[in-house]
Image 1 (cartoon, rainbow, N blue to C red):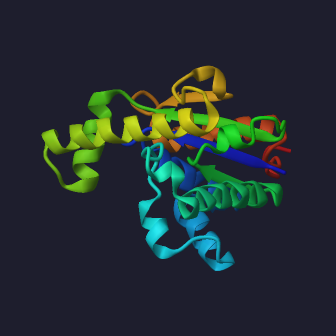
Image 2 (cartoon, rainbow, N blue to C red):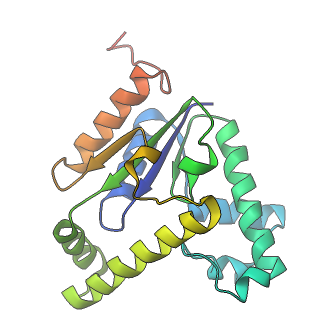
Length: 196
């Protein structure tokens, strides 16, 4: 099971780095959208529930919604199933914690300075600074709550990861190359013929 998990902050270019990794290594990219599609294909989740599944912890009332709870656990099970096939890059959804006991998983956290994140959010979403700040804070809160609720850990704790890369200092393409080198070094990705 060769797996790379990418935990990322909004505006850190983590999704871009994950896409580069999947493309470079010819790995399958597993993200929320692919998990929802597979859950719908299996009949584990409805379109209505799919739209409600955010990054945050469920509200007090949502915790008692059996369909929502079933959908979350179905998606977590699908994530593990996809990982067991190997050669995947998993973006978010607590992949680093879902697979924490596996030794053939490289767990990466992509971060960036708030100023860098704000600039990227503004550009990617065509919004002003105030709206970008609101999006940044909401995303950080929701992602933190999701990980804390389901895994009882702090997603910003660097000890949860094998690598933490700051894309304010290291350009996203260079970050992808560093992750690829680490994956090859630890045997999570096969060495290219040029490196053999």
